[in-house]
Image (cartoon, rainbow, N blue to C red; front, side):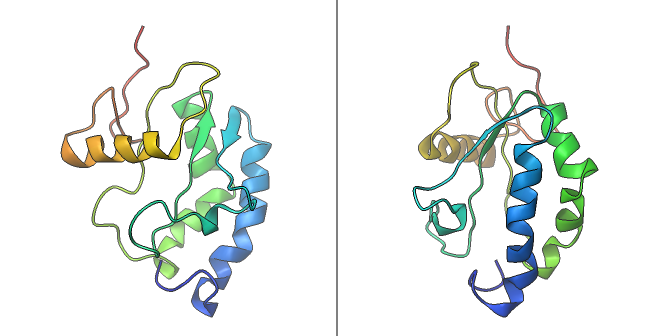
Length: 136
């Protein structure tokens, strides 16, 4: 983030959080999203940098997530991300396949980021730009 979550610079981003989470929750293919006990993922400090936000969700397919991310009202926030976030030095998104019914953990997500940041995209950890089909 360019500033703390409660800084006026972040107000436009914060104002979009609830509507975009509600949109995700009702989107085709959505299954689950990470929410802290407080009910707010912006409070979770998963990485060492307090200005790095963490978001995690489970979708039926890469296509379903892509539809939400780039073909719904969410795309406006993607287009305006430079208003609220510094350019990422490493890819800020990691995708991976899970078994039906599995709920990923924060540690699992961190390990997938580590794999992606260390190696090229693979079936273990990939991106929208370099997707891999599910195994089996």
